[in-house]
Amino acid sequence: MYFPSWLSQLYRGLSRPIRRTTQPIWGSLSRSLVLSSQRRNPEFSSFVVRTNTCGELRSSHLGQEVTLCGWIQYRRQNTFLVLRDFHGLVQVIIPQDESAASVRKILCEAPMESVVQVSGTVISRPAGQENPKMPTGEIEIKVKTAELLNACKKLPFEIKDFMKKTEALRLQYRYLDLRSFQMQYNLRLRSQMVMKMREYLCNLHGFVDIETPTLFKRTPGGAKEFLVPSREPGKFYSLPQSPQQFKQLLMVGGLDRYFQVARCYRDEGSRPDRQPEFTQIDIEMSFVDQTGIQSLIEGLLQYSWPNDKNPVVVPFPSMTFAEALATYGTDKPDTRFGMKIIDISDVFRNTEIGFLQDALSKPHGTVKAICIPEGAKYFKRKDIESIRKFSADHFDQCSLLGKLRLECADLLETRGVVLRDPTLFSFLWVVDFPLFLPKEENPRELESAHHPFTAPHPSDIHLLYTEPKKVRSQHYDLVLNGNEIGGGSIRIHNAELQQYILATLLKEDVKLLSHMLQALDYGAPPHGGIALGLDRLICVVTGSPSIRDVIAFPKSFRGHDLMSNTPDSIPPEELKPYHIQVSWPTDSKAAKAH
Ligand code: ASP
Image (cartoon, rainbow, N blue to C red; front, side, top):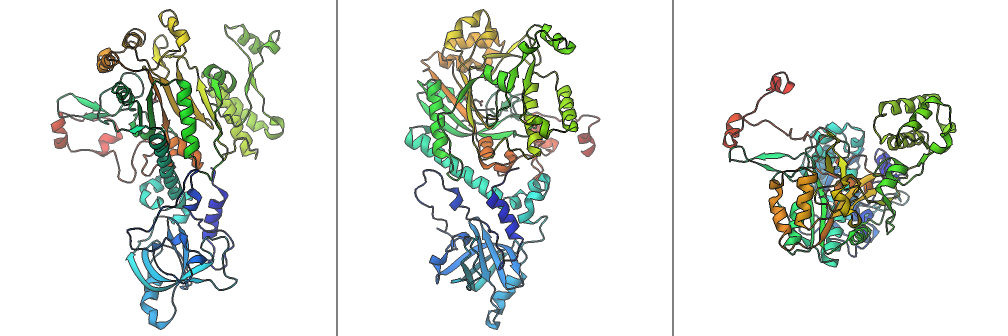
C-alpha cells in the first residue's frame, strides 16, 4: 500500500504531544490539491458562521479575530487543544483564568471528535515553541468564546487510526471514515479532477453534458444487468451497464460532442477493482477517428492531472493486442517494468527434455520464458516452490505467463526491489483487438471483444463474411500501470452491417435493438467514443489500495452497503404491485434468517 510520506508522517505526528512534536502535522489539504491549470483559490468560508478554516491561519493573520468550527482532534493536559477541519489543524489555547471558567469547561470536557465553534484572536506561539512542520505551526488561537455544537459519543475507532481497522468496520461507520485525511484527500481530488475534465470538455472543446436514463431495457451481450420491477406484470427495466446506446443515438440526433459523468451498473459479482455501481467519464463524438479520440483523451488527462503528481507525458505509447499478449501475457500490461515474456522455442528445437519436446510437437506449441533480474539472488527455495505451485494452479489459463510475471514482481517487491514505482504513471493504448472472441461458455460461438456496436478494421471488413475470427476491430483500450482505465471504439454506423453482425455472427435477438438499427438508417453520422473508468483512474492517481477508497459510499466486496444493510428484504405486500413473489431457497441461510 502506498501513502505519500507526508501522509504517514502526519499520522505519526498526530500521536505526539503538540508542543514538542517535530513531525509535520496535517498538511494543508487544499494547498496540496492544486490542479495544473487552477488559477484562483476558492472561498472556503463564504455563507457560513466561520471566518476562516482551521488549516489556513498563518503569521499573516496575527491579531485577527477569527471564528473557527471543527472537530476536537487532540487535547493535552487541559491546556492545548487541536481543532481539525478538512483544511488542516490549528492549535487552540484553553484559557486558564477564572473569568473564562465556562469556556474552559466546554473545551476540557468535550469528548474527542466533538464538534465545536471557537472565537478568539490569532497570536504567535512563544519563541521556540513554533512547529515548522505544521502549516499553522507559527500561530495559535487565544480563545474568548466557545460553543459545543455537538458532543461525540465514544467512537468505535480513532479517526487517526482508521487505516489500521478492518475495512468492514470502516464501511459500517463510513461517515466517520470520511473524516479521515485519506478519504478527504481522495474525494476532494476526485471532485477537482472531474471539474477540470468538465472545463476541458465543455469550455475548451464544445462538448455537451447530457444525462441519459438509468431505467432502460436489457442490452444483448456484455455484462449481467440489474433488473428493476415495473408495475406491469412480468415487465422489467434494466439498469444500463453504460450509456452506450444513448450516446450513439445522441450522435444520430446531431449532438455531435457528448459527455457525461455517467453512473453505470453491472451485476457481475465482486472483484477487487469492481463495484456493482460505478462512474464513467463517458464520451462520444461524430466525424472522428481513433487518433482523434486518443488525442482528446491525452489532452483531457494532461489538463485535469493534479500537479502534485508526476506529470502525464503525451502522446501515450501504443501496442497491438497481439503484441501485448505475446510480450506481457495480458491485454492490460503494466509497462512500468520489463520482465517481458520471451519465446525461446528455437533454443529447444532439438532438445531431449521430454516435456519440452512434447510441448513443441503440438500445433502452435511454444516454450516461453521470463527473465527475473537477479532472481537467483532474491528467490529462495520456497519462492521457487510457490511459483511452481502458482503455475500448476493456473496451468489451463493461457494468461498464465502474464499472471506469473506479476506474481514474480510481487515476490521481488517483498524482497525490497522496487519494480513498480507507484508515483510513476505509465499510460498505454492497446489497439487492434480482434472484433470477436470465442464465447467462454461455448467456444464455437462468437462474442464481441468490446461490444456489438464496434466497427471492424476497414482493411478486414471482407473477412467478416469468410473468417470472422480474424477480423480486427477499431477498439482501443487505455491502460495505466496495469489497470484498464478506459475503452472505446469507432462504431458501426451502417444499419445493414450492424444487422449482419448482430443477427448472423453474434446470433443476438435483433428485436431488442430495433430502435438502434432504425436510427442508423436515418442519416447516422460516422462516430466513435470512449469511456474512462473514473473510480479506477482516481484509485491509481491517489495510490489507493482499493477503488472503495475513492468512492464516498461504496459497496462491500460482496456488493452490500454495510452501513445501511443494503440490499434488504421487502415485505410481501409491498411486492404485490410488482406482481413479484420471492421463492425462498429451501436450504439457504437466507431462508433460515427470514
Ligand atoms: N460503453 C463502453 C464501455 O462501457 C465504452 C465505449 O465503447 O465508449 O466499455
